[in-house]
Amino acid sequence: MHDISISVIRHTDPLYQAVWQLREDVLRKPLGMSLKNENLSMDGEDDILIAKLNGQVIGCLMLHPVSAEEMKFRQMAVDAAHQGTGVGRQLMVFGEQHTRNLKHKKITLHARMVAKPFYDKLGYETVEGVFEEVGIPHMKMYKVL
Image (cartoon, rainbow, N blue to C red):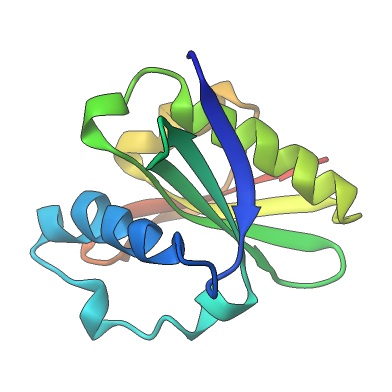
């Protein structure tokens, strides 16, 4: 992928609004849902990774500290026009390194079933059976760093 920059922001950054909109468009609207109806208080605790191309936020990944050992990756979203181009993989690789730098030893995530093969390729393992979250099937996955 050319000219993609990945950086870490907080929910107080002006770019957070673009992250919110991306999550809304990619993760909620297709399910007939809205972030407006959700408790977003965790966002304030998260390191938010953004992928930018030509100044536009085209991808995001929320990193939520669960404990001194564990980081939860949540709400990865890539703009529809850029899906399948490696943006998600770049966010994950950056996120894993960021997590290592913060001395966490394990990453957990809830993968939508359609995204499970993506996480499998990155070395994530399935913890348990299928469960429902936001009305669709997910699997809990993890990776030890």
